[in-house]
Length: 402
Image (tube, rainbow, N blue to C red; front, side, top):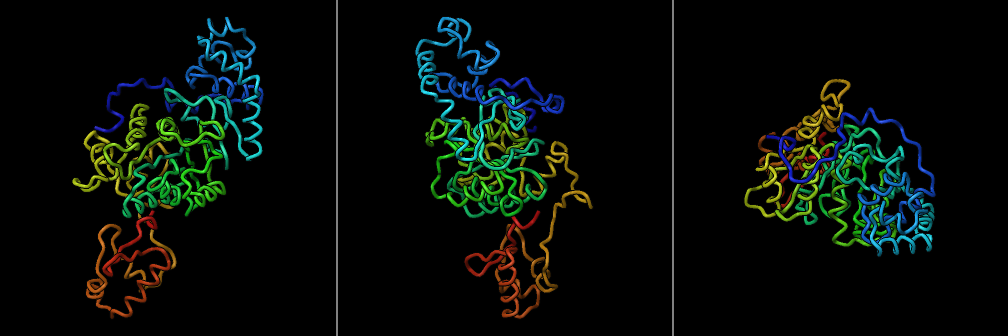
């Protein structure tokens, strides 16, 4: 049983992936409509689904703002406190101020009718009515995969996430994650090691640095990737924001990979959103007794797809992503590092991506002098294709493999 065969409790959006190519192109909405949408969102107790209903009822957000209180109550189903809050937001020029702040940041505010709005995201049960976006233009071809996991990730988990991000990028697939510590950051960095085709969905405003330890990562993301948030500029990283953020991560992606997660990890929320939208869900298997892998092992028991590396993931998603694996025109599953000498290649071929080997044992297997082997291993480390572990043990760096 795969994740897409399961029955789910929450409703699924009516749009299907097959319909995306049939949707007509939209024109960019005028700025006064953007400001009106933001003002509606600012009003008390009005979420994205309510704003969409109001826009549908009145024809536009601008038209709703010109309606009197009685009409907003009867047609828009707004309560008195929401109407009062809406009038205050309009009077204060809230929407216009947010647009001005975004422009100063070099960011933009997307509505669902804008061409840049992610097509896959439109099909979910509760898509954001607006998005704040900074950086490169968002991918429009739906070739995106989410990689999520623990903030307190282990070293192997970080390396796997890095390898997945790099492997997806090499195949022309966008890596989507949440720019959190641990697995998220590693996935972004893996993509940034290549072309940087990566999108970070934030649980705060795009102008807010969180976590603070990711200042450099954020700067690098803005050079080649994209920052996205549903939240207003200035919004802090409150706990209630992250489940909302997680639905966008899953909603933008054809598949979601959980690399490392405890049983109570927020990554399982992301996986659940993906399942609800009939998207593929994957998990990296872990030790059955390790707390850090409880979430992944639980997902595997539920029937999600196990993956070990980028090759597995790309092979499973190839039909959806339009990839041809292997061959001259495709993405090779076992890419070898370039520019190795014959001796370096010989040593490299003896290393494994998971199991490490002691240098003395490696020397015995290769029938090579220990000092000569040490020099070669040092070169492989410098070229970024081998990793030295405690106890003079070595293994391949998995993320250098496709």
